[in-house]
Length: 587
Ligand code: ARG
Image (cartoon, rainbow, N blue to C red; front, side, top):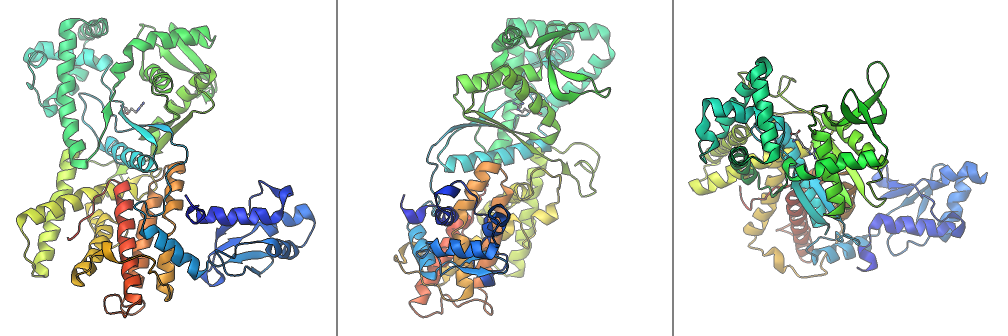
């Protein structure tokens, strides 16, 4: 990697720090994007913050810094404004050189991680025999995007599906099926997931109301844990059934995942309790084995325990998570473990992280991150449900998005008097529909709740998938119209004159910064915002009145502008691919 590929902001920061001299190494130059583009591109506020400490006027400090500041390759001569802001304006020649460079780079100037890490993204993770719900949809979409970004950065990513495939619910379900539908426990494909879910509900009802049944169900759990052949066989069939249904959703969404469910860690659970006992953390509380937590109290203000083994000897969700955490650190050698679940599980993660830390199981170089997200709400602001008040099946939800995209496209074709094959229409509808669902989710700050609205997500205006896809297809339309091969535009031909060209150019160069921010804070909505802004900048550049001519322009401007078109399209395509969204050449 050469110097010009080094992150621009970092370069400027380093130059500023260098200007202070050795005494100030490690100082933050407080470099931010300029508040007003009239003054330049960046502004450093450090002189103001140092004033008190040095007992000098900020302007005098700014003068001293600028005196020594060497950014002449990148910027116009720095200007001092107001009480002591240092304004930096990027040189046009520098921007041109940078764009020439990323034009030739398939990664568009985004350097791969210098030190690739092993990272685990634990996402999707539905529960067997229960329906996958919208919460799992969010986890799937967000987790996949995070995994894609980390993979693109060159990390070694393990995508884990921590499915709920073990525990008391199976005792209940198997006991119930033995009674009402024993074939389901011996014959493959005897059930479909719809039946499975309704059997599960009935089994649960029975369990909650019938003591004798409770006992039978418990024995069934014991048999499962002891590995009794017929029970294990039945359990496997039930898992198969659910898995097939989950797979349909993953295929529709183009999601790759490695299944490693709760059952995988079953044999490791006793050792977790044993080791906690060894480390002196374990306390017996009313027959249950637990670890008392710091910072968590019940309503009476008493410390809260995390139960790792129930009084009946059974283990729970937290015990499994402790076992899986150890496995991921020791066997998988993960350096960062990312869990993508609804915010409601925040305490669960904080608690078992705490216990694992106290037990000394987390090496200093391992980072644990819970990535929480908010609820999906209906347009009435309440929990997302069907018109009949049932939970929405994900398959129906995705089908609906695709069929609405199909209807919209048909209407548009009619209006534009365009003829397209049914194959084309189906393909466009599928991509637009699925992308709309993904993008609507990813474009929200994940920590807030979001309102699910087909109308909004399929709108061609605004920060939506159709808008972004259209921006991309429109640029490909330019190449078709002018019969231009974007790959053969030549090198070193970028020439920036018009202000919309400069604005677009600067924006194109920020991709690396955005991606590395998302790599840290794991907020894909920042990437969405960036892509949205980029397409707006492009539209201003391509605008008949405000912008410039492209196909009709004279050389050498024409080629340069076509390169800007191509770079915008490639940035959109790459950015969208990191969100799990496929582009369309035509739509
Ligand atoms: N199966 C859980 C649920 O449906 C999510 C599991 C998340 N991952 C974990 N390691 N706890 O809520």
